[in-house]
Amino acid sequence: METDKQALDFSDTKIAYAHKDDKELKETYRLFKLMNSPSLVKLGSNIGLAAVKLHLPFAKAAVKKTIFSQFVAGENLLDSQTVITHLYENNTLTILDYGAEGKSTDEELDAVRDETINAVKLAASNSSVPAVSTKITGLAKNELLEKLNRDEKLDVQEEQDYQNLVARLDAISKTAYDLGVSVLVDAEESWMQIAMDRLVDQMMETYNKDRVTIWNTFQLYRKDKLDFLKESHDRARSNGYLLGAKLVRGAYMDKEANRAMEMGYENPIQSSKENTDKDFNLALDFCVENHETIASVCASHNLKSNLHQAKLIDQNGIDKKHPHLNFCQLYGMSDNITFNLANAGYNVAKYLVYGPVNEVLPYLVRRAKENSSVTGDMSRELKLVHDEMKRRGLR
Image (cartoon, rainbow, N blue to C red):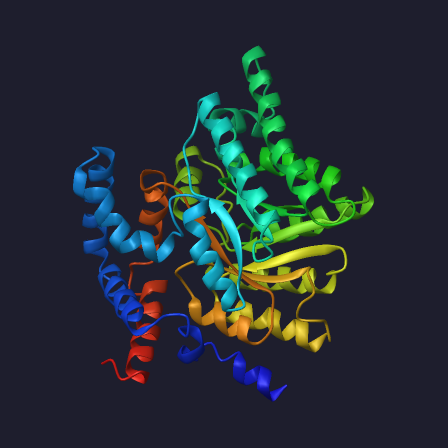
């Protein structure tokens, strides 16, 4: 047990950055240092978005040389294989995530379905890729999801659009079920989430009888999600299927608060970070306690929550490799958590986004903006990389 405690020292930068050579480490440091300036990130994001949108010749190359390679595996599945292999060599699995967003035409929505199915097929042929991620907003128009969320009557065209959505999601789910791959469905804004939860429940009831193929996502920064997790488990038990649960804190806090204020309803987000942290760890407790009937993933960059789940697994004498107990962080971030967990023998994966530069740029801008404040993840990342450079005598 003493060895485990040593291995789970998340400040151990030797383990955290063993996968990077000196040149790669220096490049990572330079990028994080740039990203630690909010004003520079804001300026660079605006210029980058405009330049790529206008197809300026330098834009794509500039993005690919900097932020793209830090947070994105490649422009397509074939490009991503190098990163997938490198992660696996460091005892880390991959969850593939096609980064396209904001689609609305049937042709675009069908293309996202097809790309996701291609990712499922790649995962099936690769033991280092147990799962893929998908967004229901990539398979249907937002307007349709919002109307479904309000339980409003659909017109003839909307009813057809809904049937097309169900067919797209079912095609992905069935392919994953047939090939033994998991599909993690992302959570999104509250004004669409009820509709999406119903769809995911429908897929889980069909495809989670024998193993967990479909996973829903629970945003614990919402006041109601701990109870919803427990209700989802009760519903799964009653209807004879296993629950898949990806646990996250959440990503739409400002948007949720602003909309609630504008429209005059109660903000669904927790009143404090402490309440979010409390519910997140209680959700971990619940999933570990019920790990035979819930497959869960602690999808978090929070050190305390990751350590909390690791301790729960150890204290309950559960096999670290139990397929229902997992950890996950975004590629390019929190390597100190990922690779120390991997080194200690736990199931851990990187969420690996891929896609053309113009498709994934909104994702990259979020990665930069969300983490550029002095209290954000980039400050922590910068210090860790700096510490490893000092340890190697590079500074």
